[in-house]
Length: 357
Image 1 (cartoon, rainbow, N blue to C red):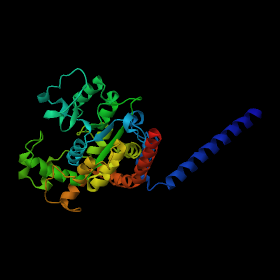
Image 2 (cartoon, one colour; image 1 turned 120 degrees about the horizontal axis):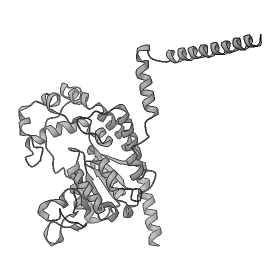
Image 3 (cartoon, helix red, strand yellow; image 1 turned 30 degrees about the vertical axis):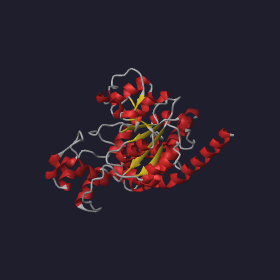
């Protein structure tokens, strides 16, 4: 009898477990949009649960926005996104007397591309004009050379300009030399339309494409353009022919929100003002005012607009859905960061006052 009751008890227990499992499954099923969408929903939930908060390179090598800048101890990196105001930013900071690291300092014509030590120099005579570091931070090979020479630890560059944010931050910065990232952003569709018209006439560019003059905007968007979801891909370290996912977008959003100072091409003056605070530029200085008061888009290329909702717009938007969502989120971040940046200015002024006593 004892064995029989024991077996009965075990059977009852197993039965209760099965019943509970069935009830749980039923409750979960009732909370799903439909039975056919349940596997997809479970997949997304699982992916989100395992998603890192931000990219690891940003965690290790960039300072969070919760820490006020220390311009004398930090090197700022500007993320150069084509047709998003990069030329304007470069011209402004050259005018402001900043020492720049991009590709200019390692051009063979200046004779410093094979140097075995870092140095800064003025390309123009009589030590006038902008100052450059003898490295190329726009290519991966150049970034590796700059890493070997110790660009960031040297403190020679005031601003590093690159279109390879992930690779540059991974290799140029380290745990002891963490930096800041600033970036100027433009709506992805507007950026691609600008690129389409610009490269038809820009015979000085490596990617000059005069044959595009024979294409309509719609033909370019549907048949030729392969520059899609560029921002998310660059942050994920993926090539242009690779795919990006919702997870890549989520990590990109978190990374930009927690580590990047964002600016907008259609809010240029306000954006430069914020960048200047982070870099530590004295805007009231009269010479600096002249640079900032005469902001010009040196590479301005007037062209027809593509209206939102048109077939051309939809063709670009359909292939850049993740970048558009990231851009929309950046618009929100831009508004939220105003108070944060102004608090930096106050903190830095207080610290400067303390140091001068």
